[in-house]
Image 1 (cartoon, rainbow, N blue to C red):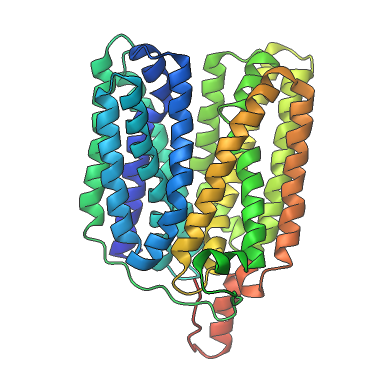
Image 2 (image 1 turned 45 degrees about the vertical axis):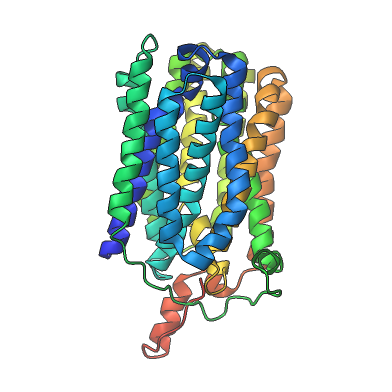
Amino acid sequence: MGAAMRRIHVGNALSAFGLGFTVPYLYVYVAQVRGLGAMTAGLVLAVFAVAALVVLPFAGRAIVRRGPLPVLLAALVTAALGALSLGVASSAAAVLVSASLLGAGQAVMQPALATMIVDCSSAETRSRAFAMQFFLQNLGLGVGGLIGGHLVDTSSAASFTLLFAIEAAMFLLLVVVMATVRVPHAPRIEDAPLTSGRGGWKQLLGNRAMVQLCVLGFVLFFACYGQFESGLSAYGVEAAGISTSALGTALAANTLVIVVAQFAVLRFVERRRRSRVIAAVGLIWAVAWAVAGYAGLGHGSQEMATAAFVSTYALFGLGEAMLSPTVAPLVADLAPEGMAGQYNSAFALVKQLALAVGPAVGGPLGASLHAPYIVAFLLFSLGITVLAVRLGRQLTDVQDQPWLRKSRVVARGGASVSADV
């Protein structure tokens, strides 16, 4: 890694560390500590999603025109202001405005940082770069949540103010770190498909492979990430009788699998077709949903149900570790020259839509209709496999098997091959 990539990874870790301090405790802070009730707390969580959906369509254009670094710095300052104001807000209006600032800044960080990773990596190193990003994000969130849990006191609003101040400080520290990054211009991939249309969104929608990847991405995030803290947890509590401590253990198992397995998994997926790796993730998650079905519907002992439920989250973590070096680099490789920011923002927008719809659908279903919930999301997981196989037919050889680029360079006697990101 060059100096720029090291700073980007430090930035990813710092931002995740800061978010880990507050994200797990937002509901408790708004509903109980500030005494604003469950309705306002629910609106705050919704505001995060709405803010992301509002700003992301414009973020891609800004990244293309201004570059990812200025957009990232503006997002960090916005998020820092949102975090600071949220820590001192006492009225519903102030909390909602602060949450919108924090949510908007946090949403724009994702495509900006992803575009910087694209610009500072080559086709050969991109999978490892995104795997490192995912590893550090999960590590940062886990460590931040652990430390925040020991600092917070539900009887003291000042303790929450401290948490939000620490989060804001992480964002501002990241401004200092990232302000020194020099982002090079990324190379091109020779045989990436040309897209039609002059407008950024029209051009993107003309790329059939990217449209199919967005559909696949929606199902991925809807059927997994959108269920973690909503439908799946509700199902575990209501159907399997999982305690809150066991639910925490399941979430910890998910993070632990990602942190431990990330680079071992990377060795496995680097020489596999990207479409087939995603298809394999669909099968792994189908097994995870079947195991969850046993936990709640298998009529076994409570110990067996708990073990099965924890295993479900662990299997989801294995699939996530396989996706991190696969999906984000594929988004980059599908983008024409200079359009990586637009494509990263579009995929981030799809992710936010899935994360908004997932809990709304999965929460009530998982809490009350246990068997239909498991069957539906098992089928969604199998759908991931089908969509991934179909996507593979739209990809060029280099996009689906990026290691071929290096082989072609060697075969041509070291001649350079341009890369389209």
